[in-house]
Image 1 (tube, rainbow, N blue to C red):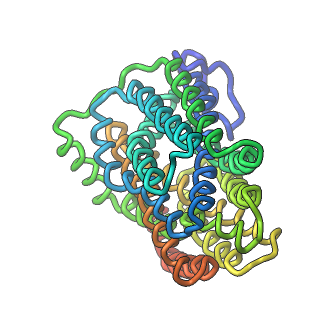
Image 2 (cartoon, rainbow, N blue to C red):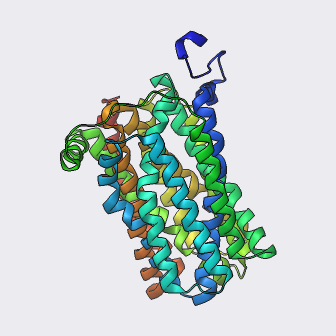
Image 3 (cartoon, rainbow, N blue to C red):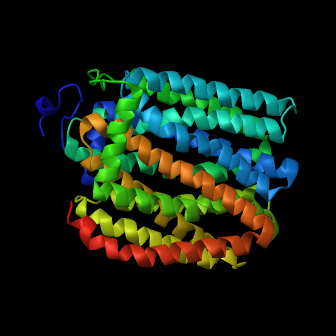
Length: 415
C-alpha cells in the first residue's frame, strides 16, 4: 500500500504482518497511550483486590467488589453504545479519561487518609463500573477509525488486546512489588496519572468526524439489538462469550485467597499467579495477531473454551506452584483467544454504522457476565471452599465446550 492510499494515516512502507496495523499513524498514537493506561489499570485492580482482602479477609466481599465494578457494564453498556453512536466518539473518549483519572485519584486520597472501608470501596467500584460502561465501547469502536484499511482492523484489535494482556502480565507482578515497597494508595495514584497518556494520544489523532446515528436512543438501541439477535453468528458468538466469562474469567476473584491460604504467600504471590494468567493471555493475543483469515478463528474460539476448562481443573486442587502457574497461563490463553477472537469476528462482520452498538453488546456480555461469575464464585467459595469452587467452574465450562463443538461447522460457513 502506498502513502497515497492512506492519507493522513502515515503509512509509508509495509510492516510485518503480525503488527501491520502499526503502520497507521493514528493507531500508533492510540497504541502508545493505551499501553500506559492499561498498565496503570492492572496495577490498580491488583492493589484493590489486596486492599479488600487485607482489610476484611472476606472472600465474599472480593466477589461483591468485582461485581460492583463490572455490573454497570451489563446494564448500561448496550445503552451507552447507542448513546455514543450519536455523538463525537473522540471527544467523549478524552472526557471519560479525565473522569477515570478523578475516580482513581479520589480512591488514592481516601486510602492514604485511612478513610476507606468496605462501603466506600463498593461505592467507588460502582463509579468505576459506570465510567467503564462508556469507556470500553468508546475505545473499541474507535479502533476502526484509527486504521485506514478495513483488512487491518482484525490485526488492530488483536494488537489492542495484546496491550491489555501484556499489562496483565507486567501489571500484577509490578503491583506486588509496589505494594511491598509503598502502599495501595500509591498504586491508585499511579493509575490516575496513567489515564493522561491515552487522553494525550487520542488528542494527537487526526480523523474525520464519523457519521452519527440518527433517531432516539431507544431507536438506535433497538437497531443494534435486532442485528445481534437476528444474525446467527453474532448470537452464537455472544453465547460462547457469556459462558466463558461467567465460568473461567471469575477465577480472578479467588486468586487472593489462593495466594494466601493455598500457597501461603503474600501480595507478591498474588502478583505471580495473576502474572502467569496474563502471560498466557499475552501469548494468546500474539497467536491471534498472526491469523490472517477470520474463518480460522471460529475453531480457535471454541478450542479456547476447552483449554480454559482443562486448565481450571488442573489448578483447582493443585498445590505445586510451577504446575499452578502453568495452569494459570492456560486459563489466560484460553480466555484470551475466546474473548479477543469473538471481538474480531463480531467487528469484522459488523457494518460500520453499527460498530459502536455491536462493541457495546460485546463489552456488556464480556464484563457483565464476568461480574456475575465473580459474585457467584465468591459466594460459592465461601460455602464450599475456593478449590472446590474452581473445580465446579471447570466442570461446567468443560460440558459447554463439548456441546459447542457442534457449532463449529455452521459458524465457519458464515466467514
